[in-house]
Length: 267
Image 1 (cartoon, rainbow, N blue to C red):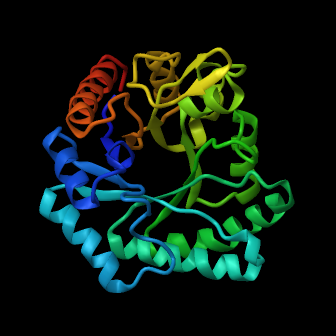
Image 2 (cartoon, rainbow, N blue to C red):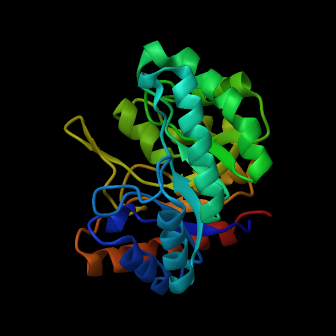
């Protein structure tokens, strides 16, 4: 199975995005997912063209493609305002050079209906500018595989798909649900994937572990995705290292670990 394995900036959250990109590139990655650095995601709906250009230029200088951007919704301000903000976020994602806009859904049940309407109204605009929205399990509206399938069906647009995050399925259910169980069912609508593991010790889940050190069976997960026709990118989100040098080691190891599994799967 051939696919791109990228890395998010989350493991380097305490560093500047420029340094994070450089370290990710040095670990052998070609693609980066833009998450928060120094306390904030550097591109959002309110970002100026100059701010977006600075982030894109930093990625170019490091030699990585900023192919994913983590976003978010603002449903507390009402649907019309949320749609306007999300379309501006999409425009900034396109200006960044992003293919994938990662969304985490909502955990507020009062916003569930508006969330789906927001995605239905935003997806056509995303399609027009070459951006794809990809929603991952994050509790609430996207807690289980059934929720992910229902979301895809509810939005029903080519520019909206699912991001499979195996660690989060364990995290948000404290291990009661397993990602290996439902991956084949959801695989046909999965457009991107997150490489994240999770431990559960004394009923306390923790995703800040290096993939392979937790409960996720990555061979089973990736086999299930491949069997369902998945060929999208994968992004490493969490590792166990805390200090930058430790993170360098862990993301390099994880790239080799995941690429090794992928090389043994049927194309």
